[in-house]
Image 1 (cartoon, rainbow, N blue to C red):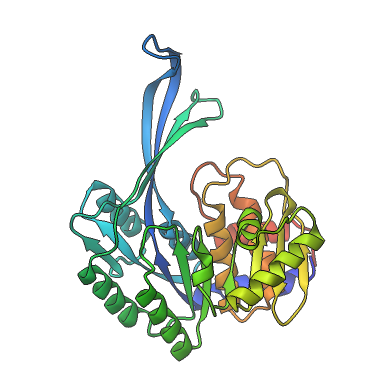
Image 2 (cartoon, rainbow, N blue to C red):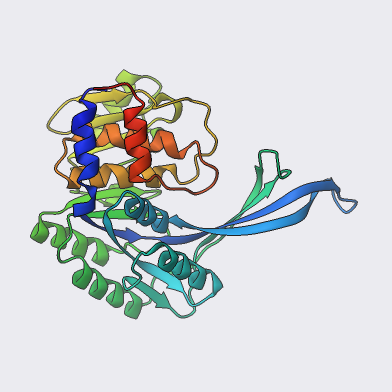
Length: 336
């Protein structure tokens, strides 16, 4: 690591004094587990004998959960439908101790649900067979957008950072984003963005966290080596008018590009024997944003985000990383 572990530990210990608003698409992650039984006579498909069902916080809700697990105060803001999935999402927030007063319910809207069918025996590794997504259609109702703006204005008045989690389900409208920028200017708050499909419209923020494939798609440039990645990253930095990019690179780690600084390539933390990448981007941006909110340098924030990402991909399903786990991983890194 570039910075000493003692300095990074001090950053982690400062997480408890920070408040982060996470606004975006709140998703319910559903897992259906089954044990393989036989091949169906109806079609050449596997029949699974149902074993159990789990629901977890996904999307922006997972980002909020990660901020909370790291010890900070988190305020999630988003939209759900008046349906079972929405009720389960609220119940998961409440069970974790995360406030729900920023969550708006829209009648007639579907709460986004990602259902993963997992196959495997009780002692065996369970593999994802298929994923079924239930998605809301159409724009937010004007009353819903007004309610979001109202909650944002009221709840984000004293925040250290605003994390935007955009999964393409329409929560972050142009009006909502303009309000985010206005609040950030007033509070001198950090704004970070993770956008699956529309990153170019989120300009003028503190940081964005595309992955390598997204960087290539947005710039139309190959990113097959460090030089090419830096060239594409610099182009995107200028296009977005952002302070920094943290590009996630899978088994190759991360690349931090600072608009007013250099480029730092960070190797993967731990092993490249990855268990599950589901939600890893949520963990990365949550750790990165929270560390920046503690006054850390971009490099310090990227290093901790890299460690957190390395921890969470060793867990099955949508997961979080705790402050204790981060401190333990740092202690085990051998850095001083």
